[in-house]
Image (tube, rainbow, N blue to C red; front, side):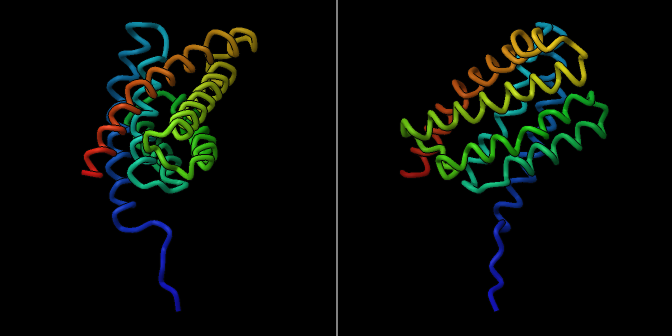
Length: 174
């Protein structure tokens, strides 16, 4: 009888830690972003930074989805706006696109490109969901301005997160 499980105890612990980080960042940085800037750029960082870190730490399909879902449930319980549902809804897209690099975020051109593609696509889709379902805006405004701001947020997130992961990767090798 094979008792092997997909998620190890370490994976579950990492999912829990990054879910807490996800919730904390979204409850603090999310409101600041929208209040100060009127756009969600910092909110995207709050969402995708922990997702990319847990993907790097575990290199397993499903961890980003579990972190986004768990973290979003926590934020909703603590009073965050319903838009958090959109971030959780698009996390499986991020997870699926990260399959291209086998959920590896080591510093190779292919993995960097995959990470940028996955994060940007997921964030753009999040913007589309929020703009149409929660903000009741026109498709043109949603697909250009609102999703565009989420796309910028994703690019900023990858520009910050990938160097951090590269440093962590080198430290892990050393």
